[in-house]
Amino acid sequence: MKKILFFLVILICSESFGQYPPKKVGDAIEYIYKKTKDTDLKLWVFNPRNHKIKDKKPVIVFFFGGGYRGGSPDQFAEHAKYFSQRGMVTILADYRVSSRHDVKVINSISDGKTSIKWIKENADLLGVDKNRIVASGGSAGGHLAASTALLSQYDDSEEKNNKFNSIPSALILFNPGLNSTRERWIKDQNRIDREGTNDYISISPYHNLKNDSPSTIIFHGTADKTVPFSHAEAFTKKSKEFGNECTLYAYENKEHGFFNFGRDNNGPFVDTVKRADEFLISLGYLSPMPTVKIK
Image (cartoon, rainbow, N blue to C red; front, side, top):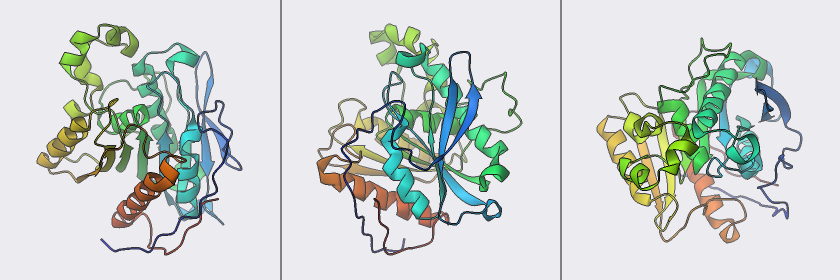
């Protein structure tokens, strides 16, 4: 993989990435991708400079974390701005969570899958290549991104765009939840009610890995007490056994959420963005570029 000279000029914002509705969407174009009885779910689209519909750019969609209880699309605003400067169409996706919409995890998964299918259906409107969609996210959002690729259930049966599948072409995952284990369900019976199913395998990306799963890169801290690092190791090992491309970057002594903008003087943020950039170059989605500024 080519080594790139990488500079990030970062302007730290006092605004929290946890605000909802999101406040850091700036000049993003807003689309409603799904209407429910409770809310209209939106996508915020950041276009590269001088973007034209005919360009058919690769696209990356970010899903926020928050344990499926809360969180905000703002979490990945700086990631979205960076990769749009690099030449991709970038999207911040909203989805329903329990604290705001009184839904189960399976409903959140359904929303995530619908968002990918909506992007495919509206590829001409967005000026993107429906065959080059990257799903990304952190924590629960990482689980959601992986679920769009690997879970066969929980598509919305009422949506109009079921002629498209929700499978992206690649995954970029930040300390994602990947393995729902039987042991955890036995210890925590409330999980069944919260997640909306008693079939833990059906919502576990690890248990649904197969041949031809999307190319994947994972960033995970070894000191993560929320999502065990061992889960990322097991997922990576199993994915490779299926013949898939899957790379895990271990961040020693880093805890959950280490990668977020504003943490540890942005050292982990810069490093994970750099490695994600290199991953996208290797896929042919980005061309090498020596200097990029994030403001």
